[in-house]
Length: 361
Image (cartoon, rainbow, N blue to C red; front, top):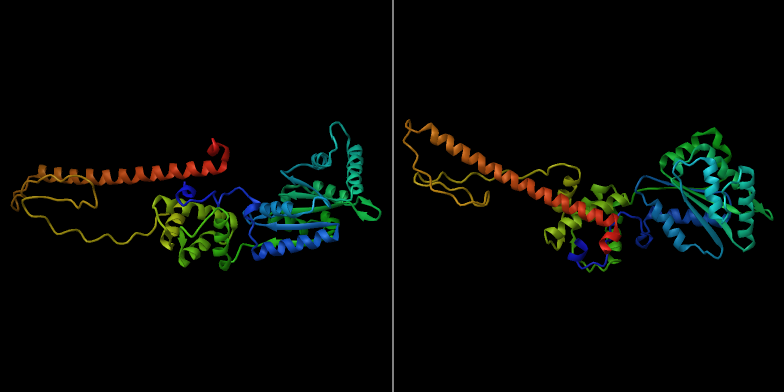
């Protein structure tokens, strides 16, 4: 919705990692430097860790787009608590080896032959294992054993491990992984981006989909976007996408702090602090009764003159109270209906992001 409203050619803040939107933050630049150093060594393990949403998968996608496939054969695995034998079968398949029916000893021999075949073509094999924190120690030990394969005194397999922070802690806290630790040649942890990087990050992603400055972001909106995401790329994408959606609904050309904070409050289930209600209007004349049009949309009806003090009929007072209560209930119902519509709209947009095929249809 917001991409059409602002004339964008795509959604710049989709949650699905896309290497096209790679942005060189300071921490990602360091990660690529460590990767370059590690790949130049041609052996051992490279370890990159980061919190959820820090950009590890985007980093891998960027690496896959930049490596020279004529010199490097990359095999990528996303681990999901797979055991050692299953891991070996996945590696075998990545080398074009059929693992079906092979016992472990035969499978290891087939993997070694596959690695040598790649080496004879003038390439090394890089095994990329994402979500490495899910691997049991036995599977990590198998990876270490695979890294022993050589040809002519040179390693023919190098391994790149990505994981959440607990993987780094486990790597350094297990005696069983001592031999693997000794083979790690480069380590880096992806930190959140700094507050000074947020504006450039937003502008970079927006420019890739045809952004021409509409909507514009005020400096305090940028600060609020950083505060609401702590500089974590995925969280920033999620927040920025919601902000653009709300901005499009309200047909704004400028996004300010108030809008960002309203979206943050909505996402966290909080209610923004409202300004004090204005003072009630002066009491109406004794011959009629009027309700402020800004507060409720209805046509007031004349009300009979108030009886003199001491002579008011209880039934009339009860009727007036009931009418006021009914009007207040209508205002609350209208507000609830508006919130339901906005929630359905947001859910529809997010479902569209998760399923591009449905949008294309």
